[in-house]
View (tube, rainbow, N blue to C red):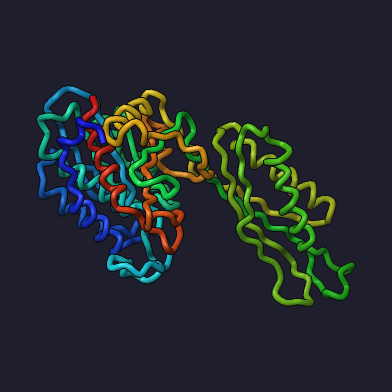
Length: 389
């Protein structure tokens, strides 16, 4: 940690208390009512200029106007948990069956809440205005998009935006930042192959959708491997395949469901046409009808170069230059912070959580936990960005 941050008293006990409270009381997307009520109580005990609640159902925006000139900066944390049954045997394990903070959002909230309370006592030192955004429904329903649509970036007019994600792929206390696209888009599709059912002993009298489905799974994989340039990562995954009811009956139809991921907007836009062309051709060849549905989800999360420079400058001061890294092993995850970064320049960065004993389990694991020293690094990053003019 650099010398300039040794003067910052890190509220480690408060960070841990907040994180463990949120971990014990997880709530799913758009159900974060108790979580939001807790955050609101803690914020109202401090000196904020404005607190807006009920934004996108359960979201909170707390505004702090500093005593020095500077930009309007939004700092965001997501609040929702996952439908996962926790398997950790710890005192702060989830108290709700089938619901768990398995992605680090409990830590995100703890960091932002502690930073907000700390900065509220130092308003005179803050350059510009800080908007603390506690966002619902990141895990699928696009709560960030809903908050933007309900005016989260106005009154005051946000000029730049930042968020962090705790990450088990890096050691606790390290900060990861990458130029350009950071996280991928995430879209969904469904395909129904409709034939004519019959007896398993008389396939010639039926139009069997199952062989077509088997071929289509393989055929679709030629899109990323043979139609897209190798420099452009693409994932096309069939996650669910349904057909038939028993061993000796050819079904009328087969259904498959999946996701596509990419960093590039033009590649993303081309995928539905490429996929449907293959579905249509296969069905023509095998005498099937089809239904193809493609649903656009989260766009790619793309960082602004100037805002990345802010993160790097703050990180070198907060955790030391030796702990600032460019992560190279990221999967094609998606993030609805992308909706905010589509509207305002900003940066999304990672804070490592892997320690000697905790933090190695991947996100969304039923055994996910963190080395809580990571909370200190996250706190220094959020307060450092807020104090950066």
